[in-house]
Image 1 (cartoon, one colour):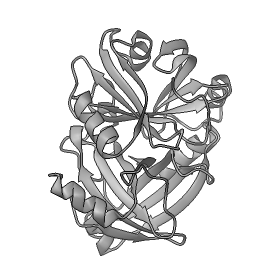
Image 2 (cartoon, helix red, strand yellow):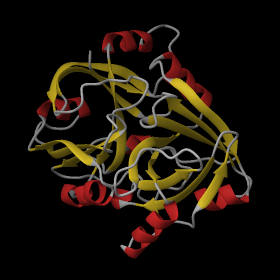
Image 3 (cartoon, one colour):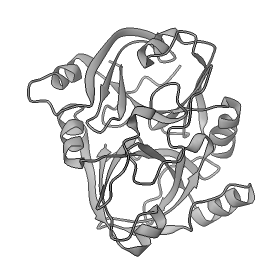
Length: 316
């Protein structure tokens, strides 16, 4: 069974739809060292209905997490007929759930072993400097066009598996208006902004793939006392991106959504439907009690102003 602990400030799982679940398990479980929390081979009619697909369309699932970390895990799902990849042909600045961050221990060594295994990185290892930390990172196009970002913070080693990988400190979603997203995440979901930075310059342009002169507005939401399950929203200033959020729906392949375990779904829905609630991309949906891979729990869906799908699973 999945863990029952629920920290509502961090997501429990990020949903990644894959064409080949065995191949995905070879990457996330065997190579990265994640532990298997639950596996459901066969249909999941309750979750399928909540996701807007037919009752027989989900045919295989797995929940995984980094050893020692109860939240910030991966929910792998395979649909009977997988759709196109969400980020296929996407530009770095397009509006879409963009990437999965993977903590590493000894990034140069992890980079070298992945290159030796045949993985092709988008660029050399780059460096970001904030007022709090220095981060080294490198980007890889993973299976199903999921952008994987391997990173290591100087002086702040995050928990990792025995293989030297930790999944996932955070996911990244692109936003056209970070102030509006902030109002939603804080006012409706009750999240805390743990970091705010703006970046620019030649090294950032080279590492991320930005046009000259573009800047990044980056805000991270999570629990300051917990290393995993953070949500990073990025707004690219000085460059426009195509809106690809309509692609990020089942049964498309790639990073689709995030799932939070929360103590009271009704309270969040009340804030979401209040007269002064931030404008959301779609109306909140209360699915009621749903029997799924998560057990039998009340479930609801919110859609952020940018278009990120957020599923809420009640854990009292």
